[in-house]
Length: 117
Image (cartoon, rainbow, N blue to C red; front, side):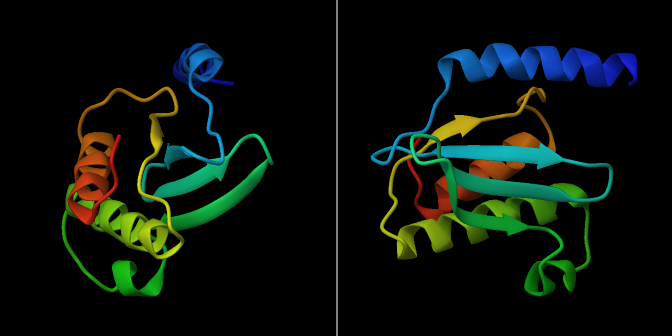
């Protein structure tokens, strides 16, 4: 395992100590790879994923542009799906990544889509 990845996993563990999703306020978890970005809304008390969106989905992947724009579209998409499921408020879990760039763009898109956190 690379040193950067170990560092991120350690940060992620520290974040997860205090951030937990309930059925009233689930957790919006973010994973970022080099090419794609994924977002899930998770109810940790039941251990299930309620809603998910990613840049691999056809309506988002067809759009060309910078990865920051795709991340914002993923945020808007996950927010729309969450609101359709009756979820209005979430806890944001940045997954050990800095709140900068694509992670911030996804969060801004989710807020723009109507989620509160």
